[in-house]
Amino acid sequence: MSLRRCSARSGSTAVLEPTAGRELFEACRSGELERVKKLLNAENVNSRDTAGRKSTPLHFAAGFGRRDVVSYLLQYGANVHARDDGGLISLHNACSFGHAEVVNLLLQHGADPNSRDNWNYTPLHEAAIKGKIDVCIVLLQHGAEPSIRNTDGRTALDLAEASTKAVLTREYRKDELLESARSGNEEKLMSLLTPLNVNCHASDGRRSTPLHLAAGYNRVKTVQLLLQHGADVHAKDKGDLVPLHNACSYGHYEVTELLVKHGACVNATDLWQFTPLHEAASKNRVEVCSLLLSHGADPTFLNCHNKSAIDLAPTALLKDRLAYEFRGYALLQAAREADLFRLKKHLSLETINFKHPQTHETALHCASASPYPKRKQVCEILLRKGANINDKTKDLLTPLHLAAEKSHNDIIELLVKHEAKVNAVDSQGQTPLHRAAQCGHLQSCRLLMSAGSDPLITSLQGFTPSQLSKDTIQDILQGRSAGREFGHRKAAAGGLQVRRPGDCKEAVHTTECELQGRRGTSVHTAALCSWLQPRGRGGVPAAARC
Image (cartoon, rainbow, N blue to C red; front, side, top):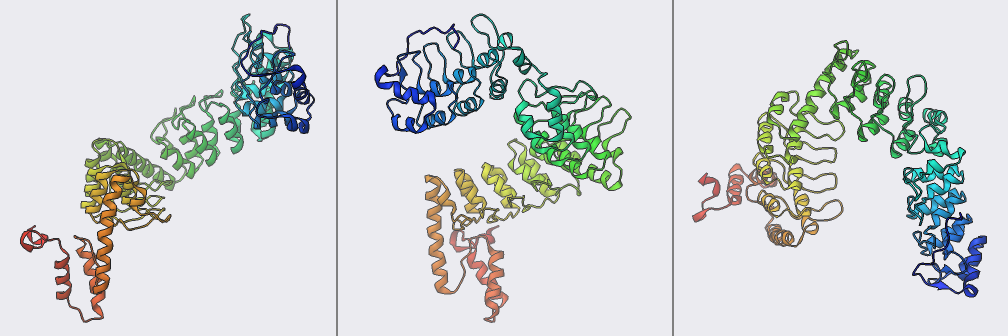
């Protein structure tokens, strides 16, 4: 330890007498794990060495690079934040002596990479001063801040040895880093990568960043690592191309997807006003084009030659697909935002039931789940134009499932009125009633029940709606279920299947089947249908009063 850290006797943790506690500290110093295991207990795991700087056993093990002992102490409850008399934590010790594996272990257990001692020295100061390159890299990868100044106003870079100065700049072994990104050498990449050089530019050529190269060469795992460590998806090369241009130009679907998910702009333009979609379309990268369109890419943008992505598409098939999918995605977005003007602009018989290629959502799904106030008007227009009310997403969700989950009761009423299937099941075997009950939407449950939702249907996990619901809803569903079970038992005794009020069509179909073997006539069927209708005052069927 440096001379600046004179002991300043402090600390409230229990201390061991020199004679009684020396054995544990010596075992930690020498790395005798079995001996440490015999000596360690709950009372002495964070004890202090009174003969020195009031260090803990963890300070000793970390400073001497005893990884196995450090690991055991941490498992036993050693405090990574414990400070000695100079304000140093065990991470300072490990960094000062260049024990990179121990540093990694301490950081994984919550040690603060920016912890300051009594003189505002951080672990990064320690590593930089002592020329510990590997430790500097590990610290930077875990969020160490190189701009912190000590009490003399000096940063880690100011105090760094010549060998570590480069690590604290953007230029640290950047040629090797760029080559690792290009070739996909992940191990080499991680040994060089820091938040300072992750966005370095090549000194020649196109002045690409590591992410440009990894994206262009389809190094999926490398792209993931770079993004996790702060690579800039908006970084531009010499021609103002972003990494997404590279990925799209070569048709790298997974990389394109990763970049878009991390915020890459799908309509970014280079010096020639080419967008990533221009690149993909001109090279006939069909699936990449579809992916870009699904995230808002505009195929009508013109480049410096006044050409759109549609113009650059090499086949008539791709030209048509770009135009169709652009209108389809625009319709989905308009429905999602309940934007009547844009909806009418993009709505046609061709696009009314357009499905998102990945999610299989239609405009009616989007509008049913929309939080915007004009969603009902949008749904009405879509239904009037022929939207399929029972279309299912990739997870087998109907528009009614989504409306029930969001408690959009205005949409539930509208969909039910247009004969949406109230007992349709999704990929988990759940009905819209399951969804509403699970989310605690009381009024939605009432609407669905009155429309004929069956509270006895069990999901694939074996749950009925009431078993997924809260107390208030549970009472309603269980009460209705009890009545339903009684009706089923009574029907079984009489040889008839009970139907809900209003299920006349279903009852007619079932009863005709049942009566075929009994010489039943249409009169029998009509009579039964009349019996199933809810009664008004004086026993008159409700249908007769309409």
